[in-house]
Length: 289
Image (cartoon, rainbow, N blue to C red; front, side, top):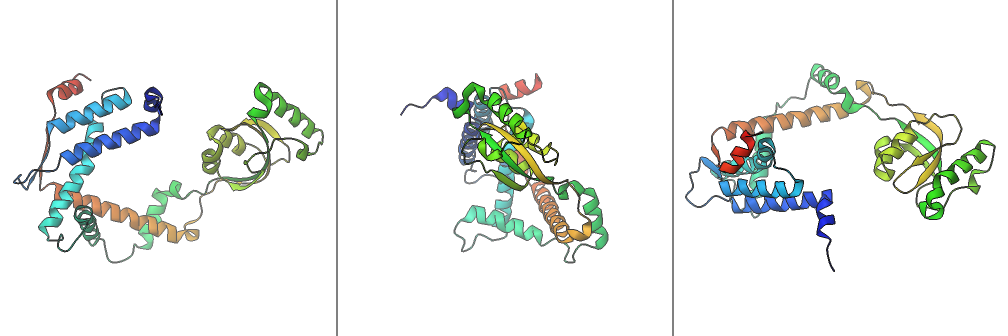
């Protein structure tokens, strides 16, 4: 079987796979040699050059300094936590040593969290600062009639519009539309769910419709064209804190854990001399931007 390389390289998923492979190979080669300074983490020039080349090929442009740093930082983080775990002797009787040690260090840093639960004032302040996170999205119930491109070809819009006119005159909806796996009825559908199923244009079109008992459209989707009648809708709302306090407390505690982990890592990172060897050609490219 022949693979169309041009088509493959245009696929965003292929970009992700290739970049992931490039980073994996680069960091596999990056393992410190025996005898390296225990307080120095070196990312060799050759590895930066490799990442530069891989990203340039995949994205068709040279990566910025910030993009390279973003790719390198997780490896530095892993190495810092790994070495600190070894220093604490956490490697004894452990099988999948490296990843387990990194996880152990993360758990240890979480022990720095305050033992007492957050106060009412802290919960209220967090909710106010992050209220958009807790918005309940608009939801719609609706019926739809689907028109297939394979059945109507270039006349698909005309077919849907003809049906729309007939429906406005009182015609039976069951006499229109094509068979499909697209559900005839949807309940409590959100924009996110509709977009994932049939595309953003479709989701936007459906959510914009009024609950007026009338059929509307045509609305395009990934798979064809639709006529839609909204039967119920619930507008987006932000619940009162009392309604979702448990969710808010959980989110606040998760943020505290992230903050503690990040600060603990930053404190540990300060103990190391991080050396990133930038190739001359890469440095010159960044300076010319």
